[in-house]
Image (cartoon, rainbow, N blue to C red; front, side):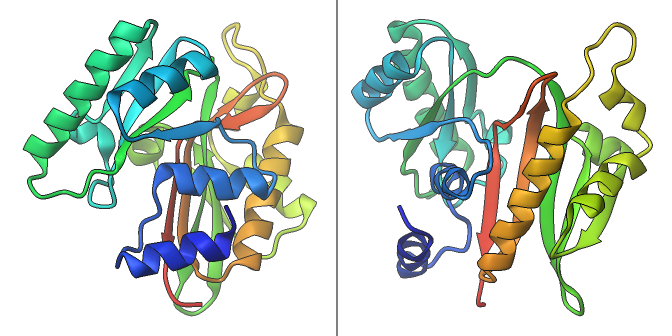
Length: 232
């Protein structure tokens, strides 16, 4: 799927929030390491896709009207069988429909459950004066609690991305503490730069969040993605 086709589809449906499946597909094409994610519109599709991706899997509700999926019971983790996937599909749709009456629910996103790594966030927002601004910090709920993040204006060079990583107060976590393995700083640097290139090439992207990105000793992987679009 091309960026232009996704953009046209979203505008035709009157939405500014891309689905997780759309966002990950576009980012994957741009060279950003993301967890492969497929869209299942039926219970049977979810089960078939889970078996292709390999257990355990994660299921998440796909809806342009639901930004925070876990808040509405729209996420099921560590599903290890065909039966568990089928039950989770039914529960997600029922829970989301009850929590957000009238929400447009496209289906569920299915992805292999990635091994846990050190959680970081790679994001972008648009400043009214300066334009696109990249953000990096510790991810998951830590970004909300600690607000330990660094910023740089797009476009970025490699030294900018490395400085973003080094500037956060939680930098020692990425070096490995209390027996935890160190994160692959080169992989995180490449991820930041690829996202910067993506938003520079597509000025319609107004906000972007990869949270969390799992940082491993060898590589990095974004397991959730959010993109908001607007006018170029």
